[in-house]
Image 1 (cartoon, rainbow, N blue to C red):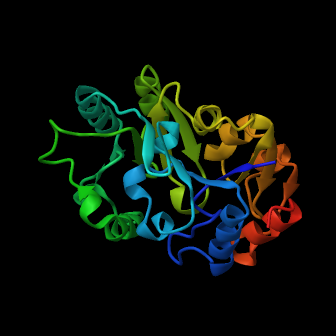
Image 2 (image 1 turned 180 degrees about the horizontal axis):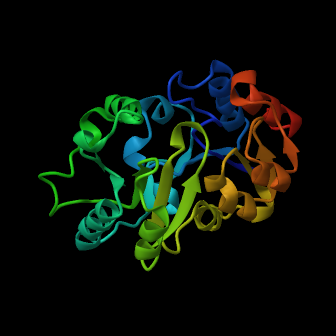
Image 3 (image 1 turned 180 degrees about the vertical axis):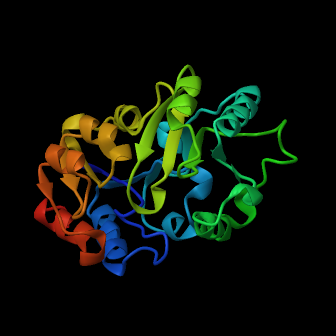
Length: 267
């Protein structure tokens, strides 16, 4: 029976600094060669899916926190925030002393001068990886095409609870505490999650949800784990994800994707 396998990006198939392990690349190629669907299911905006991942054998993409779905080059869903709300989001985050990073299908927007010394290294990495898909907020206030926002926390300065309360009429949120995303709150469009996107894509491809499998490691994979039948946690995952998993594979750096797919009998 054909399976559909969903892969988180960061610390599942991709390390922000070192890229994709060769064993992961080969394993996903073998998975697709064996007749299965391989879907990148990332909380990242599609604009921030690096070329290295786009060159891989994935048959489809879920991005923008679940608000973007494509399969074999055809876009099935692409929900964006109204530009007026995008600008209001910037104003609210700055009011609560957080740094807005606006994420869209085509571009990401942030103002580098807002970054402070403790997190400016992340801005440099992001900007290098984005290349021509980077835009400043400044000068683009009236044409912000975004689907989500990652708000960076200024340690000891930001009013996180105030920002969350102010934005929850329009967004759901996930707060991160580990990895490169630590000190970040993700705000995603209400009603769209990795889990809803998994269900939408399975229905569109007429693949029963009983044939779905996912690999992930962090709290932005929670709804994906809720939706999929078989759940595989990467080594080093947060405890909530481990608790939901059918089994824990090795970490990304220890060929965890290859070992997990082998254990499932898919490669």
